[in-house]
Amino acid sequence: MNRTKLLPIGLLAAVPILGWAVAAQAHNGQNHDMTNISEGMVVGKTIFTSGRQIDIRGEIQGDVFCAGQNVTITGRVQGDVICMAQNIRVEGTVDGDVRVAAQNAVIGGTVGGSVSAAAERVRIASDSRIDRDVSAAASDVQVEGTIGRDLQAAGESVYVNGQVGRNVDTQSNRLSLGDNANVAGNIAYTSDQDIRRDQGAQVGGRVDREQRPAEDSRDDGWFDGVRLFALLAMLLTSMLLVMMVPGVFRSVTGTALRSPGRTLLIGLVASIAVPVGIGILMLTVVGLPLGLLALLIWLAILFLAGPFAAYLAGRLVLRRSNWNTNALLIMLTGSMLLLVLYHVPVLSFFVLLAVVWFGVGMMIRSLWPLRRKPQYNTPSAAPATVSAVLAESDESYASDKAASTSAKPKRTKK
Figure 1: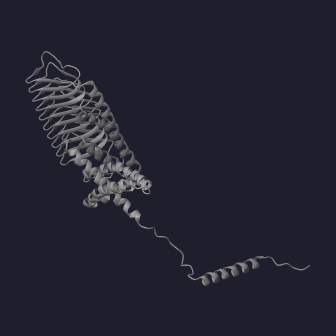
Figure 2: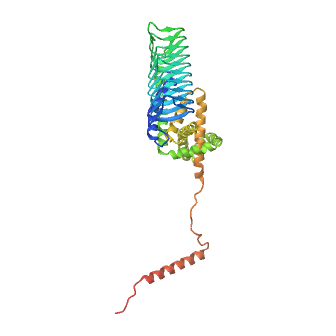
């Protein structure tokens, strides 16, 4: 399977757990255990909500951003739907796009834009109509509704039993076409098995299969496993760090928000100058130990650049919402945004540079005040001359002797 399709499956599999942790710990008066927008109710703005149960049956005249355990949308959303939960059901009308990450995702109703879903199981229900494209990454992908343009799917099993207006492109171990499948364009699939096609399935174009050698598959699997482990470790580390020291992330990113240009410039200069300085130190025998120490510190800074940049991105996304003080939700939002951008060709390179430069710049600006010498409350200056020191010593000796003499008890003659 193509690594660009496989990685989001594993990455976003952790989202329901993290989203539930956010919902469970964010009881600070800005979220609710249950969000219920009843039928007939109209909300004239974009909403940000999280909780155990989210039920939207009314009309939202904006976008919907949500994170929780169970999310159900049966009303109308005039903007986009961007949600992370354990179970998500979108069965109403969405004028924009639907972007969801869950364990179980069901898309029904009408979607005016495109659908992007990453989950363990993704189902495009038979009563659904998506006007544009569908991109799904899951272990089990089922398409039974109507897709206006293209279908791109990656998973262990992909089952198509609906209408696709143009082409189908899949990466899976098993691709099946049901009796009601109707693909107007071409089908291109990568699999070790031939396509399973029922008698009533219709395909307007070509059916092309690509089979990669087993050796390449093993190599890709090893590479994908290592990369997946690294990204998941960074995501979980970021969430753990912000749980331990939320004030540090708030303070450090606050400096960057006040002067982002200066932060970016400092990070850019440091990213060039510090490696050069470390290299020069390690070329000399005397400076080798210092160079090794500087290298370890620099690697730690680069590792922490990701979490700090993710928190900064989360604050920018949620800056006008009621959730801009929830450290866990901010970190989760920023981390998932960066992980998605890392998989966009070409753009991922510039995103990585921005993460490093902003992260390094924020930490250097926070550590820079520590270079100042501490101020101590010192006693008055000591005598400057030797005679003054001797005089002070004599006075101290005389006073100590007088004190000891007065302290001795007087003897009386019997």
